[in-house]
Length: 443
Image (tube, rainbow, N blue to C red; front, side, top):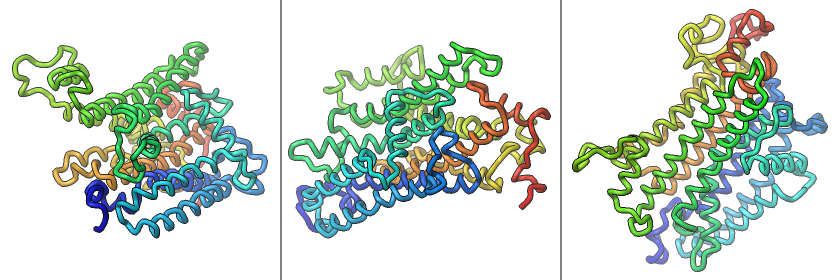
């Protein structure tokens, strides 16, 4: 590889082809396409997503919502492809030229922002205005009432949690671009702006969802009803998002540990870490049997991953995989699923459960002696961010389907444990609807 020897060792081959700003653009544009596919496929299942999120459908008879999203995605894709082609022609993969031409990918990111801000009539201005107004509300942890689009607020806030690291990278790219003598297409400096700025940005989406859960809890407490319970599920959901903070904090301390900057020796840092797992403090003596900081971090990653996986399956998708045996093995539905479904094969549900588990546990690469550095490579980081966005795309199908089932097969409680909802829906008093997974369902 030819180029300036002073910068060549700093840039890997993947970054020469797809520098950080372009990676951000690719993932965001892919997300727009993915949302269009969500709307398209769910509409084929007769699931009215705009109705669930309380979005106006006045003109959807002329142009279906998914077609408008496809048009927006195509409009964002064409300049991305053109910009990439020009960039590759100008740089030829040479490190010095890659660093010099960072204005091209940054210009595309600026254009991408404008596409969502400018009121262009051909690009669904109403939809983009709704998106921006919802983003403004949820960005401070706000959440609408149930009849005013609460479900849409929850969907967007959950999507932001999957884009947390991408948002952190966007800050890094912007910080490097505006830093004197630094190029945003150089090797990413994730300490740009301070050692803890990027971890803070990554934690914001979880903070948003945490505040939303607490708001829902206090709504239930202020106006309790016979069907609303005491709000415990919202606290349990808040705990799930809170479990991400120790992972973010410990990862930041472990990655950027410097006793001079932190003002704490390694022993002191260890004692601080140990507080998280033992209220008695660190063990006496030399501590040779103590948990190391990476092991403590791994413990919190394990808790966060499997708590989130359980919530995806049991709460967000209302499946009975983790329910008591009589419910899980009920003859009214396939094993581990539920009675009312819209996807026509049970294998889709089982496949989604398996994929969700695998993608929740990508941290396990660190346990392999052959893959332990995968997450430290720029290409590996990009793949992990991309896989999380794809996991969220898959999650949306089943989360929206679940909300549609709750809306049309049972009550709309503000706060009921989902096991109680399932009990209501599957009770003899609930209306009878055909089950697509039943042999009697018309094909």
